Image (cartoon, rainbow, N blue to C red; front, top):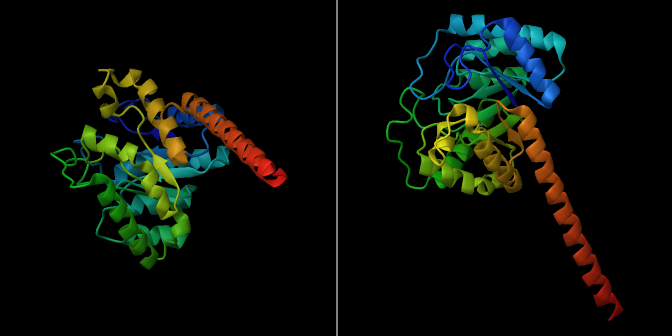
Length: 278
C-alpha cells in the first residue's frame, strides 16, 4: 500500500504532493515500483496534528482520486476519519476506507462502507491524533488490541459490514509508547486467529529512530526489519512511503520462507518413505 499524502503538514513528506499534478505523478510512480494499493490522505494524523475541515479535505483528495481512478486499475484507498469524505471518495473511484478512528462511537462511516460494499481498514488508536501520545496506558497492549478488534468486528457486522470486507491494523504509533509498539510487533502472530488480513504501518515513524537516532529520511532499514519480521508472522499488507525497497525485502522474505517449506516437506517425505520401507 503506497502512501500518497496530499497534505502540507504530514510528518515525513508534508507539502511535497499537495499539488494534484505532483500527487498523481507520485502515485503512478509508486505503482511502477510495485504498489498494489494506493492510500490517499488529505489530513495529517501525526501526533498533535490539527484537524482540517471537511471541505478542505475534500478539496485536497477528490481531484487526485478522480484522476487516478481514470489512469490506473490499482485499488484506491481513502485515508479519512470523516463519513462525508469517505462517501465522496468512494463515489469518485476509491474502493477502500482506511479509518484510523475505528474507535469511533458513531456508526455513520460504517454504514457508508456497508452501502458501498467497500473494503475497510479497522485501525486501533487510543485517543485522537491530538491526544494519543499523552501517556498512553495499557495493562496488556496485545490482549487489549485483540479484544478491540473482536468487538469492532461484531459492531461492523451489525452495521452491515461483513468480516470479508475488513482488514485489521494494530495502529503502531497511534496511542502507544515505544515499548508498547515493540510488544505489538512481537505479538503480531496472535492477531491471525481473528482470520482477517493484517496491515502494518511503520514507515518512517518516530519509534524507529529511538534505537539509532536516525532522522525521518534514514529510517528505512529499521522499517524493513519490522516488515520482514511481520511478514513471517502472517501480516499480508504493508503501508509504506518506500514501495520499491519494501517490495524487494518482502519478496526475498517470501522466497526464503518458500525454500524453508520445501526443505521441511522433503524431510517429511523422506521420513515417511523410510517408515514405509521398514
